[in-house]
Length: 122
Length: 107
Image (cartoon, rainbow over all chains, first blue to last red):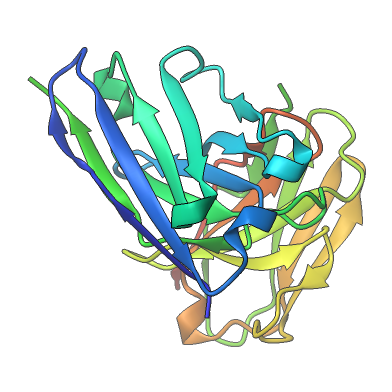
């Protein structure tokens, strides 16, 4: 069974930093692209970014709204995905989901974790 | 960026109704489109991928069609558990972009 468990959310002041984690199980994590998706309270879904698997360079892509402030990392030995968030803004307040994807462009975001809430407020 | 426009943004329907939701892309995306269902307070779940392929475990009353710029999600006979918000996602190019959502409410 595919499981994605996020942690690390909480309350942070504007301009602050936070690191989210996602531990994966039930599949071969190292073979997968992984995404972060967020949802502001009462709003729709927004794609945050992606990290490719090492066989496809392990490189990253980001939404314009977070580029230069957020960094996606992975540790395949720990089956873990991370989202390092710096220079946080109030508009970054959202539930953050990690999501499994693949290198097949037709097969993306097939599972999402339960999410972790990030609140940016003074 | 590719803009995804869903219509309607909200609708009321009765159990047993046939429901159709549309998603339009601002440029062609071939069949690189996925549909999600999000029940209130729950995590989004994938229903349809590659525009028309049914996710394993999803009831056959759900179907997807379309290619290029216009796509539809159809629920052939609405069930009580189908009252939810539905989102489309294009994954043809970066950044991936979601539609604004369609909330299906009970009439």
